Image (cartoon, rainbow, N blue to C red; front, side):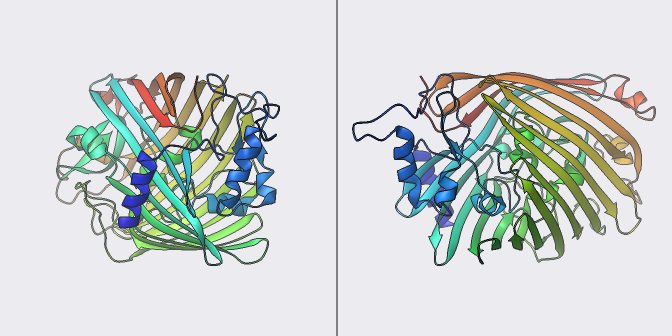
Length: 474
């Protein structure tokens, strides 16, 4: 625990280094140009490349991945799947396509490379219809990472925190048709629970076994097992959306699990992983670390066929994940395809995702289907969409009341949701991208739900987003 605290403290209070592995903004900042020479005859980009030579996992081929020209700032993408794994810039041991940019602050401290990235949204949400509500709150997360060469491999320590236990009052924020977990002992309906203060505390070790093979270990008192792709807070395809997807509890709700152990082997473009973890989802005491015995397991196969593509299929058995159904074990499957395309002054990231949970005692099945896509264009502009189709249960009809004696949860209808949003970065502070934006969601309502939700409920969000990044803004 002390290592995590020291690493995060250094990251927060040390001056940032304008470094690679990022997609900095070129408008409103000092471009790194190949024809801009310093007194010793080296360009800023060449000097930076020299400084980066001691970075864990970096070799000559990876240095050649640095992108430098007059119109786009320098950033470095992993050159192959193994390098993307060692980067560890997503949740757990998951990966995104090699070309996916990760805005962050970076600095070298002795043998350590220290990194920090975060997303903070302050938002006002308003929803229509009989079940709609309004609220001002903040969703947020902060990740610090420290990495170095250790013996024959690379060691990484990572801590991910969230202040949502304080910034989301009432143990939930409004989200029509959402369900999962509890607030004040009752099931949450039409709302999303906040994240825990400790979202991840993890140690990782990667050992290269030959030129094309990598053996990886992941130990986390709180972390993300090998089940599903990168969790939604980390996906570039949804980086501007401030709220959770409706299918979260069929897709990636295990991203905050207790006592996670994962072992993975990657060769070439393929990777296989196995995890053991504690299956119960976090309780309502969001400031604590929930732990327990290893009673659940998951396996995941990932393929990274090119720098712009990533796909995974995973399967897991979860022991008693929901507090309101303590005798119910679940089976979960998740399949996804990610695509990322860097653009001249932007980026385009998309994810297609199918998640499914099945109750082992009564074999009730819940499916969710998700398409999300975020386009960054002309450097400072973001437009995105999230389209979902999710199975909802009879629990929604309880309106957050205690479960009746003998209640059996069953799927009763599918709900489509269509979200569209836009925001624009404003260059107010150095190293902090500040965006002002809005998001609109329309829901399709099955006949069974119309008496309680109305025919055409909508949700509107106005927000400010803060995100640290390296680079000097003008």
